[in-house]
Length: 199
Image (cartoon, rainbow, N blue to C red; front, side, top):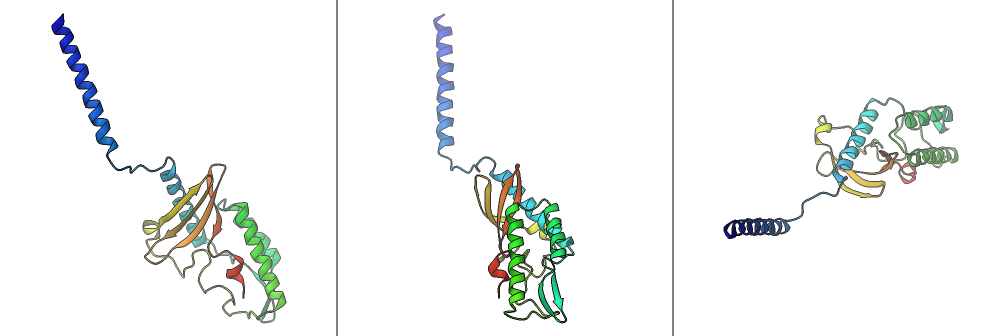
């Protein structure tokens, strides 16, 4: 009986010692874990950007259609603009905040053209922006964009994410996204602001 008790005691001691040593060895390792849900959100946001760029690649409509008087643009064509707003809303890529801001930009452009601060002649480059596409601040996309596009500087607080996308060294584009009904949508894009559409 004593021998049986000694064997059991030895086994318990060995189990407790090995558990303690394992616990100490894992606690000394650097913490590399990613916050719960962060990886999932990062992948979803990358998918959102890819969906945005794929939509834009196929998009054949102008962002802000203008009315013209002879050879000069004189304001926004509101009928075409209404159709454009419906189209943007139908993509399910954008928040109400983005769409409201897009509308404000149209109103601003209309005012600038009506006040005639600087004539915008048909066929000329617009007197605003930097000659790059507002949707990406680029001239065109690289051929292997879906393989090289990365999400960087990602910060998430509650249902709001800010980040940049990049596809090459020295290039990045800032984005703000909001989660609505558990789905990430574009809330702000770097080039869609009043300042970029002013002259």
